[in-house]
Length: 296
Image 1 (cartoon, rainbow, N blue to C red):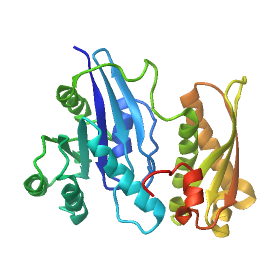
Image 2 (image 1 turned 30 degrees about the vertical axis):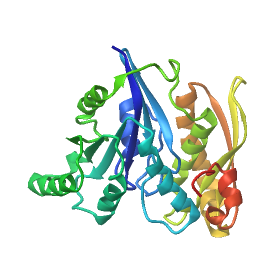
Image 3 (image 1 turned 180 degrees about the vertical axis):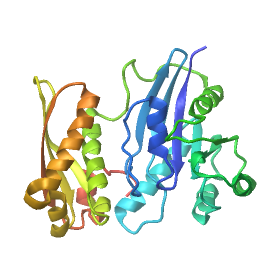
Image 4 (image 1 turned 90 degrees about the vertical axis):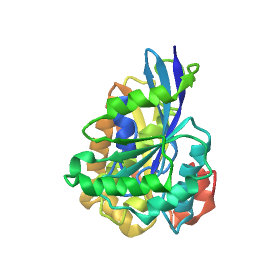
């Protein structure tokens, strides 16, 4: 019996949503970073095996933010829960009960979709008595269908979680052809891989205000050619991204090209630029042009 369905992964920033998606898909598709608000768009990865197809939706971290972009991010994440077959709500194993998580659960009380509580980063703790008390409080606040402890980074219990997800789904068709790995176009993935390297290598003040878009993409030539622009909000940030004699921009490009080559399975020529668009995160024109069209 072939099963299929849609599963959304929600939670605060930095709880491992993208890491979990990559581990399930057994390849890098969603970018990760230790910095909050890495994921900005609802992004789907498609899992296929002999008897199922599951479309996992990686969502931005739900948080209180002041910019229009931040408000878009949280509303976009919460909007997914009503249109899927199952919700995975992730929390960090090392955190005590957080009011922000309680607030998310309050938002979910009107949702009829079954929800699994996923305790991630289980490998980071030894005080399981404290953890159980935290879980009990969350369970008292919401009637979860199931509760799981996992380590998305190490893969602990992820296969078992996947089996229980399949049990929850109903018989259904393949929504995407074999070989499809995401609902997003290839160009989106390339932009994200570049942005990930900016997050990884630059100072703390840059990540929240960085955006990447492609100037051109020529995939059909012997060597795929990509020209991309990194957008920041201040001249000082542009200086950080470029670095002395272009050293940082080169470092970003070398690392991003490696991941892009792994994705495209071919050689890549990548050329990067950087420009300033002041306060773009609060300007609807730029938000729409950079792909943030809904819920603003």
